[in-house]
Image (cartoon, helix red, strand yellow):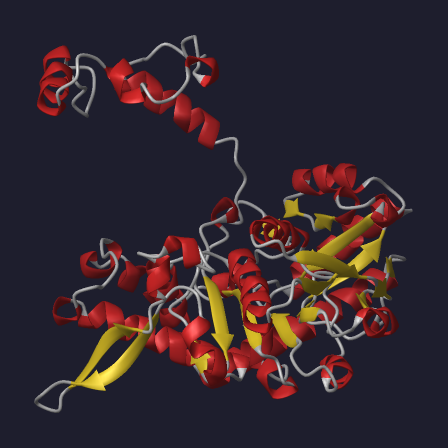
Amino acid sequence: MEFRYLPMTKEDKQEMLDAIGIKDTDELFADIPNSVRLQQELDLKAPVNEYALTKELTMMANKNVSTKDVVSFLGAGVYDHYIPSIVDHVISKSEFYTAYTPYQPEISQGELQAIFEFQTMISELAGLPVANSSMYDGGTALAEAVNLSAAQTKRKKVLVSEAVHPEYMQVIHTYAKGQNVEIVPVKLDQGKTDLHHLEDLLDDEIAGVVVQYPNFLGQIEPMESIQKLLENQKKTMLIVSSNPLALGYLTPPGEFGADIVTGDTQVFGIPAQFGGPHCGYFATSKKLMRKVPGRLVGQTKDENGVRGYVLTLQAREQHIRRDKATSNICSNQALNALASSVAMSSIGKHGIRKMSEMNMQKARYAKKKFEENGISVVYDGSFFNEFVIQLNQDISQVNAALLEKGFLGGFDLGKLDESYQGQMLVAVTEIRTKQEIDQLAEELGDMHV
């Protein structure tokens, strides 16, 4: 046989059709009008044997470039960080690797405890008392927060800073459309949310204000000033999307009065892996505990007084009363949440602070080296580990040249808007060496002349 898997035979097909009482597969689609059905064969290659298929796919895969092959200065939401070797050892254990939703606590204590630990660490980083068991990624977590604010306040308008990740913004718009929520952008001033514009937009119809901290351009938003603007807004919620590694050093959004804090834990134990999957987090106040999308794991005791863990406070309408649902997420990224939990536990509380400090120090060293090589840095404000530089060449051409030199360059901001032409968002993490930073600065300096 040419295939490792077992293809379905005509006999198999007929046996299944007989079992459900129909003559052919066309009857399965009888309720779908012919006018919307595909009337031709799919335009696919003819099937080949396993060896030929494996060879073709391997050749395609080898065209990819990963962070194992080049030195990455690309961030923009996905970062190249240190991952302790223990992470892969733990998540590869079969009881975690193949686990599904732990509905049966009596056989899922390990999985439930791992999720509980994740919730606890996220709660500490965000500065809020409640965190759920994770979500798909940072974008969906933020969009869920937007919809929650509208449902909670009974208002249909949300202000979103233009410094929020553009892909997150797209997800927000998609979610908001289904709930008839109006998304109003807040302009920027020197790479940060324009406080004057925000103040002008605030009124009694605003459900929530969304900012990113640090924001997409790397700048650290003035959270205290934003909080003061919202002090007289009785119902308006402050929603913050945060890089959790940055919160190892920066003041947690919860201490600035944030009602909901979301983000992506890819920075802890999850490789870039060509864009996903990731792990979103969602933290909030006790007041909103019963409105949190997804699920929470609670700690309790059994009849013998032994500590145990259970799923609790699940929003049941996500499962059975879907017409009343405010969220369509009723699952979580348990395996990736476990990876983040193991990474955070391995690095430790003091280690995370040191790791975040190293990101800040190395990014500032890179900024200094770029300026010494004649490259201007666009914004003067405080930043975490990303900043924007201005070049006098097309960024796509610059990145192509850098790739030839063994570097994965920064994100081309010109892809987002013409006003950003020639600007590159550079990310410097703790694993970048002085030699790598110096060499990149020299290469960019030579191209910039």
